[in-house]
Image 1 (cartoon, rainbow, N blue to C red):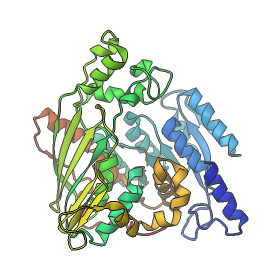
Image 2: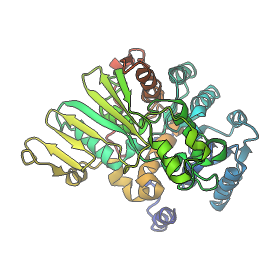
Image 3: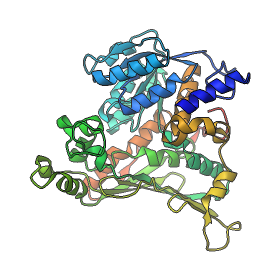
Image 4: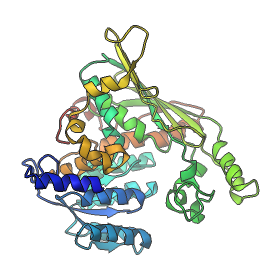
Length: 450
């Protein structure tokens, strides 16, 4: 944060203005000078968004909402430290966010709450005419997916799914390569969320990460709500970090769509073993039966003939990876091993180290703002996704990642649950665009604005 403040200060002192940083000046394409933003949920993720918003000169944080008084106090301190005006505060009960949505001085909201609240809060925000930014995943059921789409269409109010991995530097570079036909006609993709979350799903009720085996009422932070999904659902409950970038590469909802999906789950032993190892066989949680399989594998067929494999692997020890692979007729990229092969360019039957290719096809956004963005969180991705949200909301136009995307990507959770429960039976993917995917044109990603 200090580095980013210095960046802003130094560019101003140098007389260069702030036009080099989107949102820090009155851009000619902006419909409003300042966006009034309310935050619903100021836990760890919401606070990250808050800190980044407070660095912008085109945003006023006018209201915050959280049922945890400690998080409210922290958020108020961040705002005061940034010399911001004291926000209106909500959180006396679970539904107090509706009073935030009734405020005239809130144009847009960022929703960073537990998953079960995402859709209902986004729907209420759109009903109230507020431009909604929703953390991932956006929905838990097919009904909720349709709720997002139907509410957007009925009200004309926009929402954006805040999938930050779509803005990862290597992801955008590979998207650039695909747009320039480096790999030829695309055939196959792989992705997933492969991340050891045992230290996130359990804690000691005092420390958010890394200690203890408590969850639910005795846990804090994500263990308080996230672990229950592993107890009650045998599904890929967190698909969008991997699938979001792949869906954009494959033009899903804009010239292509998901058609059907099959899913399978391994046995689930990882969370039980962790409890026994860290808390002992006599710990009460050692008796909990976790429904979720440790490794869940789903395969999607698209209308244009590509296949997509998605892997959810969060309950066993492993290094982090989203497992990306983008493969076309002339070559492919694999994130694991950081390697690329392009027929006619690479030495036959030998991988190229990916970085030189990624540098060559570095995305215009990262070329322009990469140095500034790096300290924003998650290696810089958080700056870009938030900037896209703010700039879209300021103009009140459709965002790059819209309600149809939120519905299609999030639908993997209920569809995988159905397929697993029926021995891998294929599930038809709803067409959330109602046929308009055939006419919708892809978003123009290859630009340096947002």
